[in-house]
Length: 583
Ligand code: ATP
Ligand code: MG
Image 1 (cartoon, rainbow, N blue to C red):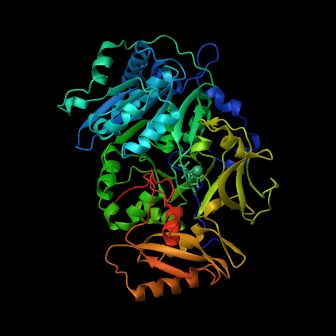
Image 2: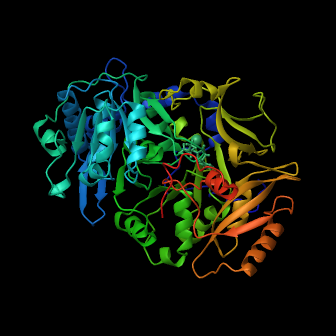
């Protein structure tokens, strides 16, 4: 994509020296042994994510350091040190052992962002189980599909959520134990027959644990993908991923020991575990967890109250913050913020630059996906930003732009974004779908399903998902470029762009936009947007049609579902909508 915004130059010196001083130099000399040496490992050479994230800090003199500052949606506040985390996760590992749950069994959570989800996650990893978190807003069917597909034997949930899915539980023959977390006795109803009480099990379990016995190759975390392009796939990772999660927390989020870090993603999505659990705690920082949902005011309050220094969020959140204006952040003391990053969708240049206006800091976009386990392309603290670019590959991994035969394309050409396998965080399977897994590896590359280009200086530019790229009168158009142009108009809050079949042009570009408050959907505004887009983009790529709608269909993790816009436009079946966010 062409650059419309000036480069954001980074200063020569920083209050906190960035963990990567010179990205290019480091990429040339780096080897993964350097990072492997910074981890603790288990006696005998094993590797366990929970040990690296929690226990080793206790053994290395950081037992009393706060690991988690938790704020509930009703304003409750709790604080857990690394040693609290160690003992609670030991307990849960012992609970699983006591129930006879064996290594490799799938333990799933269906919970809100309460402290117990963190105990369960790392406790299950200590027990050698595969942990799979499900997003709490799912209805019964998506939960059933995922528990069925994964053959989960344990489900940890909460009373209201348990009630929501009561009807599907008898349909899951593999599920042996349902454990219910009744926080502070929030629910007065008795447990359903056969269910186990989390609090009672934990109280009865020892907080000391036998030595861990996992290896780097044992399965660890399993996540179903976001379902943006189709039916979600169960991507399975191994303990080895911690190497890259630790490294990228340090390099791409620039985590330093004194940081107060906040990741806004829910553990139901990979960002919420790789960067809401593993990366921050392996880096030994204090992390804020907020149970509640989005509210611009509340979010700024959290940053201010906890003195958050590093903030990792998503473009959809940035767009919502933008919608509420740049005056609101100025009414809070956000001066603790030092580094802000975003992932999940392309971050429009407008968003990067808005960070400057609102916080005095640009927002650092980075790219990865459930399958890659950790960040692969990023904007680093020390590196100049080209707004709209997702940055450059991390040290130690080769990322390429290739054609259908696997040949690398020259700078400036759009092609398939591909990764040279293996890399430390690489997924090991799509659960029960070997064929699909194998189909992603071709000609010595892993195919990401995204299209991108690289410029002369090595910056990567996202074009679109391969499925979403539009072919109009011989031009290949990435929706991102058109959407980014549209949201530069003051009336536009969000935009989603699709290709609509056309007898002459093959496809024509159609845009759906939602408006900021105070703007009305008039024909005049629509015509103005058409003119605006034609001026910004060439007439060949500018949308032929613009439709103003109330809101864009999105996944529950906030990604625009262009395939739904298209299906609805064409009157086709909507396909899998299990992750669709309902307004
Ligand atoms: P599904 O695979 O089920 O369709 P999904 O691809 O949205 O869902 P995730 O693994 O959560 O599931 O998302 C990864 C994808 O999100 C990437 O492949 C890419 O398309 C998009 N993405 C993530 N970060 C960025 C970014 N910084 N810039 C552009 N796209 C991004
Ligand atoms: Mg995907």
